[in-house]
Length: 182
Picture 1 (spheres, rainbow, N blue to C red):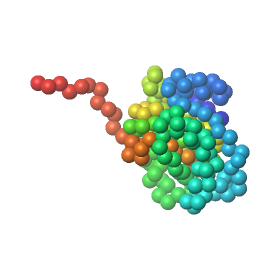
Picture 2 (cartoon, rainbow, N blue to C red):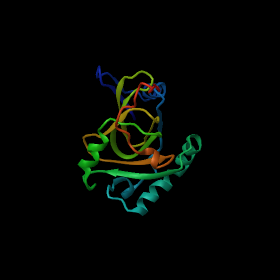
Picture 3 (cartoon, rainbow, N blue to C red):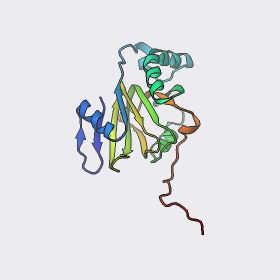
């Protein structure tokens, strides 16, 4: 169940319905998907073969297809981060830098935990969304955010994309002033 922590006050929203309502007010999609069908090595393993990744995508195909139909997502894949991930620290260094994307950043947590820190697009307030297995989040395009692992330092997630090119991280702040012609 997603929980929210506000950076400035350290206040928390721990009730799922209240958390979902707050996220909706910020334009962030939050859903819970049933993970009970995920069994055995598909759940426990953090060094997945391509076949295992495809098996996970197949298990969640109805949910992926429904969300893709609503939001126009064209592809899905699996990302796995754990002590078994080569160059884990280098990857995490990229993820913890504040950035945004030219399309939504969609993650369904299959197993493990993670935190999306988000600059609320509606009010500019920074907050964390602590996610666990079964949580889906869609951070709207252009929304400043970063991602970190939690104490167990592992996450397995389905990612949805409109295009892989649109997902590239943009680290610099966008210019706020329009250039004028002299």
